[in-house]
Image 1 (cartoon, rainbow, N blue to C red):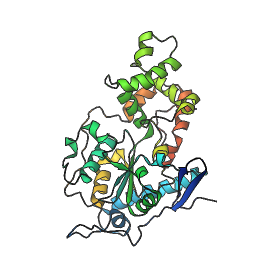
Image 2 (image 1 turned 45 degrees about the horizontal axis):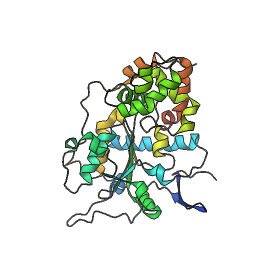
Image 3 (image 1 turned 90 degrees about the vertical axis):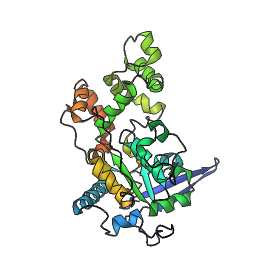
Image 4 (image 1 turned 30 degrees about the vertical axis):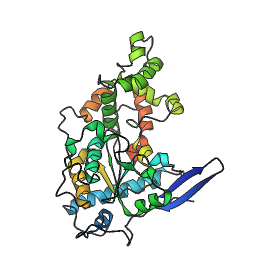
Length: 339
């Protein structure tokens, strides 16, 4: 049986070892008529999902609406073209989907795509006044488990109700720029000793000839070429899932099973973030915090890292991240030298 155009979500809940309950959910492209409006005293407004699909002029321009609509259509078509297998999603697969019940939002966070600032924004939106300024929230606090609710915490019926009626959004990034950003953050910063110990020592042991004892113990000087070799090594994924910082977006957020209403891009972060806040009705009181980093990973920096990677490994890496390039309409970088 073919997947319908909106995609199906299969949620599996294991009850002991005897059977699996599978709930079939038809993902919608337009909000249902019974979507709740704001129930606070003196407030009556459409939900963000209704605002997006019912033609309310919540977005600043027709061009912004066309951009978001075009991305949804491209993603849908890419899913139909490039995916064939049906997949069963477990609660574990929904841990990256953050829920804001107050504003009817679901956000799938992708590390290295402004997810810290999105988590800060959602902490403000769900805090009932405890927080007002996203940048006043320490970055480490934004990532504390339990500060924000995820879709995996709800029952199957509650999950389905939210998927039908909430605005679901995701932010993506050119895959190799995101990958270089993850490498720079996790393997070239002295404070990331936990990553050095867990991943760096393994990478050096497996992919460095005659490593020094100190490197084997500390794992703090992993080269980018060693990181790439680790990623494409078949043993890596056999042993355990990729870490979320370099896991593929389609594996984190399941965009061919969950219908995302807004696909934002890191390359157009400011206007896309503002569009989401506008649809949520909070753009007048809340600004998305933009990073002022002068060393942000861009295409030129990524090209500089990849010039030391052989065409053989470039091709292997491109195959590994192929679905993210296809689903989110990113072209193969010009600096790639794949045969």
